[in-house]
Image (cartoon, rainbow over all chains, first blue to last red; front, side):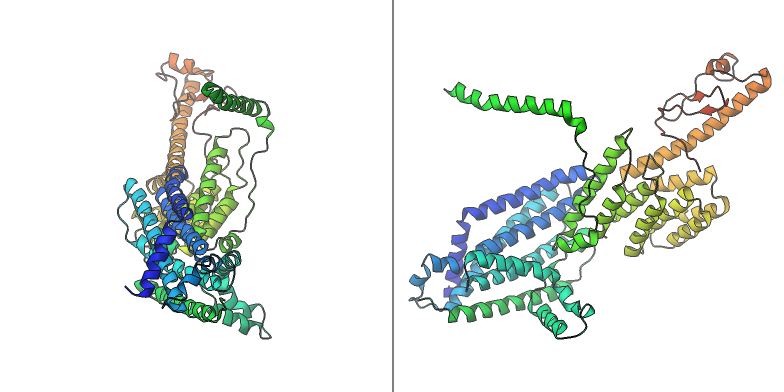
Length: 255
Length: 289
């Protein structure tokens, strides 16, 4: 196994030992299960509510795991000084970062799979037929979480866990309003501001690209090409974040 | 010691239960009921939901059906002030929720106390449904229905029915309804055909029950007409109007006291000499149009 693989596996083992993670997954499963009760009182929309709440739980708790664990990926290693025992070994900083990133992505993937199983189990209990289309939405939620892990990792390389958490949360919120940045020229017509906001639009992650929950739950067909393009966007964005993280981390004075 | 601990735990719990029950019993009626909608702007809320608009729509939908259901049960304080804004927020958050458009249009347009008595609001919400789902025939049925039954605009209703009948999946009887509304709009039989169509295509139990009640109301109108004829015949034969059902039963005009479709006896009004519904009839009134 490569060095990146070892670090990834260790990061995965380390994160799954974290009690916070189990609490988050437990809450997510409880939230999915509670959708059954909400569905019962909703009248006429039982299945829709179960799907909506299930997908929302996967997204919300996946985000919580990605941000809360991601922000400590590097900063915690520095604070606990465990990083210093690794640096003399034949591991580059880039390999270390990549390993950390892949490890957390694996943790998030396992959690998403557990929550997905919970959602499908509930739908099975409701005698609903297996609906593969939901997997499309869940897949793009996972791609979104991969981007979010990258964002958290980037901030984790140069600031404290708390600030990294705040920044990652901020990026997430901005990522949902980025379309406003693109259309800023309709509000301000003169000056450089519209150009700046347009640059920001392309620079900041657009999380709306990964959001196909509504059409999937409504039973609309989401074309495969849309999923492919969104995935390509996500993977490219992840590579950009990893390059930026490596660039910052390599220049960081750890002495 | 164990017993003491158990008592220490159960004692306060029992006390809390007793005090809370007392407060509810004594002061519950003074408590303000929740009649506030903090955010009425669905479009603003949609942006603030950060990708969880569907979940928001579900929560507003839950609130809508519970609000409407609770209000319908209230005998004295029936009002539906929040029904329109709640539905508006729901459909703004999730325009794919077809049921909210249809349900909203039905119960916003229904005359008070069965609904909010706001047909124009019903048209507004169903028009938005049509804008979002132009190929969905059911919305045209709802819209045409409001024009015909609640606004009395039969020409407009017929054109809406006709438009909807051309859509994929539209039932065959929609064309017939269009023709009937245009030529004989306002007639009881036309109403019956419309309500039957709505009953057959109802998406929710509440809508089906509502259509069934209206069909029963039309049946009651038919029955009352026939009993009024009996009253007239009695008058022609005896020169007097019957004062109670026993007069008609005793003289052989009727076999028993007639009841409405909800099994509540009709009332023979001594002043107008007409057969009317009893106040507590399950029909909740009769159509005025």
